[in-house]
Image 1: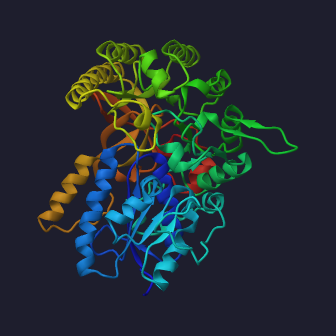
Image 2: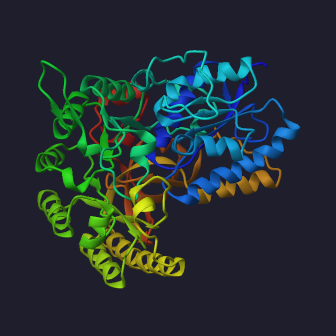
Image 3: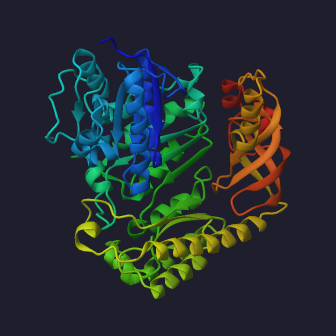
Amino acid sequence: MTLPRTVYLETMGCQMNALDSELVMGELLSRGFRPTDDLDAAELVILNTCSVRQHAEDKVYSRLGHLKSVRGRRPDQVVAVIGCMAERDGDGLLAKMPHVDILCGPGELHRLPGLLDDVRDRRGPAVALSGRLRAHSTPVRHAGAHEDLEALDSGRVFNLSSHVDTPKIFGRHQAYVRITRGCNKYCSFCVVPYTRGPEAHRPPEQIVAEVRRLAQAGVMEVTLLGQTVNHYHYREPGRPSTSFAELLRRVHDEVPELPRLRFVTSYPRDFTDEALAVMAESPRICRYLHIPAQSGSNAVLKRMNRGYTVEEYRRLLDRARAMMPDICIAGDMIVGFCGETEADFRQSLDLLRYARYKNCFIFKYSPRPGTHADERLSDDVPEEVKRRRNNDMLAVQAEINLAGHRAMMDSVIDVLVEGRSKRALKMQESEQSRGEEVDPTVRGPGQLVGRTSGDQIVVFDGDSELIGRFARVRIVAATPYTLHGTLEGPASEPVSAALARQRGIPLAVLGA
């Protein structure tokens, strides 16, 4: 069997999965693979999976069901399932979908090239799942390009923009950098500690060096990642330990050429005033905090094993806003968790109104096999009640969103332009469907989309030359989920004139 050369990669789930996909694709590009958007025609199909909710796993099985029919026409197509679902349900997945060639857990991604070589040498499943023996596992005979997962992070490919097709997969102006892997919290509803393993923190020098290389490669915004990012704490024998707050300050101060730095996702119990102070004192750290509460009921929080009370969570929000009145806060809420009463739900709505989140990710509880909640607690809230509570909470949050956005009317804000808006892309797709030739590399006017430092989404009309740069935009209209603006002029983000010239960015655009 010859090694496949075209690869289709689909990412489901969180930012950590998005980073994993970037690292995997970078490694494959360096080995001569070419990305494609055609699932059926790809010689290698990689599904990077999520296990946080059943809906995410159902989507994977839907894709795999389609690929089973493709296998009849394309017997040489290689199918790889990577990520959390592969780790959680490896044997079960292979039993249901025997046409899957590769299973690779998130802690074994550095071994993926070796798994591909194994499939090339012999037809049969090649499996790497955190070193655990599985019924369908076979020894991996070929070594990967990296000896461990840290080497995969540190060896990431920085010149992805040189590949014509990669902008469809990666935003070269924004990048994720992992600072910690895994999770030790064991919230009763969450599968992450079982799929990504215990916490492991990267050396601060490697993190700073990676951020510096990204900034030098033209990245304008870096997001530091961790399942509980603020739990970062690196200890090395014979040297002082590094806390999350100290890491934040180091990255900010030692990479001054990076215009924006942010981080996700934070855990309420461990967020220190020291970290808040670093945010308040560092002009290029975004005043943005994604800090999930999950419930506004102390009884539910206890069953979730979250380790804090509603009162403690509220005090954290109060301290953050006292130190940074302009901070934008985002949250997560779960409705219908085991034993949640109507009174519990009303308390969650109360917390939602108190928090005044910029936005909140709201989910119906979905039992996850292997978790404490699935094994020890009763999923006793009826589905119709979950659905009603979900819709009610979404409606309350939409009102909060709209009020926050209307308060920004007529303000002028700096926006990092990410690309063409969904409306502009749909218009382009419509032109293509009518048989009109569309060159995606052609620059010109149209509706653009970008984000503020507080992570608000802004759409406005402008030339596509602005993509990847900062622009000043006046807000003229608002919906619950989007700000609409008009282009005002140069941005004021702190990018030096020397760096702008290095990147070929017109100084009039940056205001440098």
